[in-house]
Each structure stands twice: as C-alpha cells, then as structure tokens.
Length: 136
Length: 381
Image (cartoon, rainbow over all chains, first blue to last red; front, side):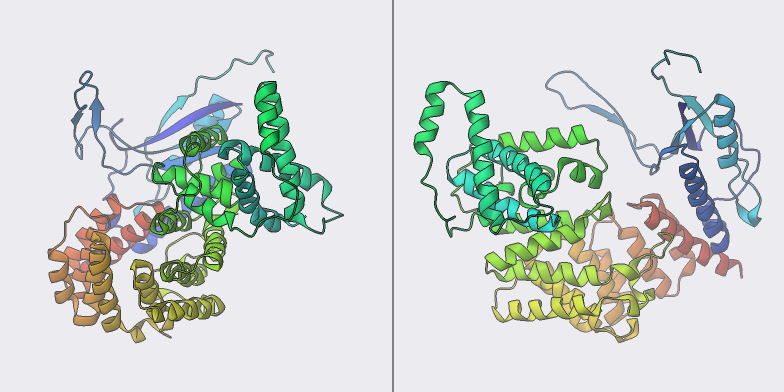
C-alpha cells in the first residue's frame, strides 16, 4: 500500500476541459448533488479501507518568510488572484499507482451544472514512504 | 466498571495528594496509575469507599515513584511528612483543581487540555482524538502545561471567570472521537456549580444546557446545517430546556448579572418560542444590549444586529451592522441575510457567495453557497 495526495486547485494546472460557471450560479439542487457526491466519494474510500483524510482550504492566505533575527517576518499577500491556489486535498492509501489514478479520475467526475461531469483536473502526488523490505 | 464514577473521583484524589505535598505532575501520574489498577480490580468488586481506595493506592504509587527517583535522604524526608491515615478531609480539593487548571500562566489551549485530563479524568488519547491531533502532540501539550503550573501555589484562589472561559471553550469544541466534549463540559460545569455558589457558574450551566437541548435539530443526518428558523422544534430536548430555564431563573434572582446569564437568557427566549415567528425579538435585543454593555464584544454586537433586524426590520439591522468592522467573522453572511430580507436578492446573492469563501467550516460553506445559488436561480426566474 502507498499513500497519494490528490490535490484540488481553485486555479492552476492545465486549462479546464469543461467551462462551467462558479458554484453560486448553479441551482441549489446542483449544489446539493455536488456536495452529496463528495460525501459519498469519501464514504466509498472509507469502506474500501483506502481513505486517510481529506481537508478543504479557504481561498485566503499569505506567503511569509523570515527577515532575520529581531525583525518581524516579511509577508506577502493575501493572494486572491494567484495563478495557483490549492482548494483542498484528499489523502488515499492504495494498492498501486494505477488505483490512485482510478480514484482520482472518479473524484474528477464530480457532477456540476446540469448533473454533467466537471472533468476537473486533479494533481496526484505520491508520498515518500518507508521502502518495503520484501517485495510482495 | 463505571467509568464516569471513576472520572468524577479523579480531581478530588489529585487534590488530596497535592494538599499532602505531592507536586501536581507526580500526583496526576500517580492517580492515573491507580486508575489502571482500579479498572483491573473493580469490575466485580467495587470497594465500599472508592475514593478512599483511590487515595490510598495513589498515595502509595506516588511514594513508590518518589522513592525510585530521589535520594534516600529526600525519601525519608517525604515519609516524615506523610500524614497520619484517617478519613479524607472535607476541604474541597476538586474546586482548587479547577482553578489550578485555569491558571493565568497557561494558554487557553493548555488550560483546556489540562482541565480535561486532571478534572475530567480523560486519557491523553481521548483528548487527542477530540482535538484531532496525534496523541504524542497532546501528551507534550499536557506535560508542558503541568510543568508550567508545577510551582503554582495550590492555595491561591483563582479567578472564576477564567475557569468559566475554559469550560466554555471545551463546550464549543464539539464532537469527534469517542468523547463528546459538549457533554463533558456540561458534566464538569455541573460539578463546579454543585461546589461553588456563583450566579455566573449557574449562568454558564444554563447556557450550555439550553444550547445542548437544540443540538439534535441543528444538523440533518448527512451533516448539513439547519438554521434556527428552519429547525424542527419537536427535536429539541424539552427536559434540558426546562432545567436550563430553571437554573437561569434562580441565578437571575441573585441580581449579579454577567455575560453567561445574559447569553443564557437569549437562548431561553429562543427555546421558549413554539415557532420561529413567535420569537420575542424585542426582549432578545434588550438582552443583547446588556451583553454588549457587559462584554463590549464585537461578536455580541454582530448578533445584536441580527436581532435588531428581526425586531425593527432589516433596515434597522443594516444600520446597526454599518457601525461594525466588516472584517468580523460572519459579518458578510449577516449582511447577506439582512439584504435579502430587505428585498435586494442580487446584493444578497453576491454577499452569500463572498461569505462562503471565508466560512469557518465546510457545512457552513456549503450552506452559504446553497443560499447564493438559491437567490441566483430565483433572479434568473
């Protein structure tokens, strides 16, 4: 088993395949269907024993760095308009890279306006882990 | 094995050991060791005096540990100090423990963790689960807190307001893991109220009971938020409401109003209404005026603006809102609600979508996004 991070972005990554309006322009039923899909998705992963955690991030935030001893840190932002903005993540623990791809593509299939798939781009990143002593 | 009986005894036993001269951290460790033994021995055979049993065993554990760790001379000094065996004194050590755990030198987060451990008798694992942090992290937080209060004088009378703030923090932490912190906070506040006669302690207990009574109606089975106006009032726990109102009324007679009594009074007025329409908003505004006077809290002012909007109409609510800092949490959501009631769905929809972006939780974000979608769908006709 290996862990993978599925990253969802507000912005960033390849250009969207489907051009859909922001969520507040959907109908309430479409919003509900999307929320329900996300819940069911997490529940399915929990059932298959592949769920580790998922979190959502608010759009606000800032960059910060040290400016040397005795000086306040330098901050930049908050960036509401940065090119790449992470919206949230799901961590899964799955059998193989192929399975990670399968899970991610399922998540990418969340319904949008009219109930059709968003075909959303997701970033998949493997965790560094402990090398298994014996190959299964 | 009655776990809640055990947990009730923990603070009193720690208190006895500390009064006998044990430092707080060692006393706490000794009691935890004794509890492990109790869990093993008691299931079939509950001792006649569980507290006395725990005191005896904990004190022995403490001495064992002290012997193992200190030099022969220091050990002998300690044994010299050992009091004669006899009945456990009537001094209320539990109360002192409440104050010690809310010591001003601790951060609120440390106070909360220490209170749950020492007064509540929860295990580090249970507290870690409730706060969704690794057990090692919580263990560190607790031992740092114990070191901080190690030199604190146990006889100092603490500030009851600090104790109440800690308990209120526990209450608001909600529920995850296998311990319901809201229920735990109520249990601890009940204990405190039984030992310490104070109108604000009663006020906080009443407030917790009144809020807790409405919890079953606050979310749907799938976790979506239900606003107060839309809640199914049949799901409210009338027993808890009656108890909360009763405690509040007794406290108010004392004529020493504080913020928790004022908040409980507002909660009682909500609980009293058979339907959302029957809510006595005029009286609620009056209580918010008291609350603002007592606390000068921006959150109280924000909630007051909502109440004014209900009592005197959305224009009056918006006017009250205009005096506040737009950076306040939930300001935008309140503005959206008042604009919608004022007949401006376009502005309301935009504000709901903005508010969703800075919502403090996912259920709240989803709720606000749905409100925005609802209004935008209406506007499209």
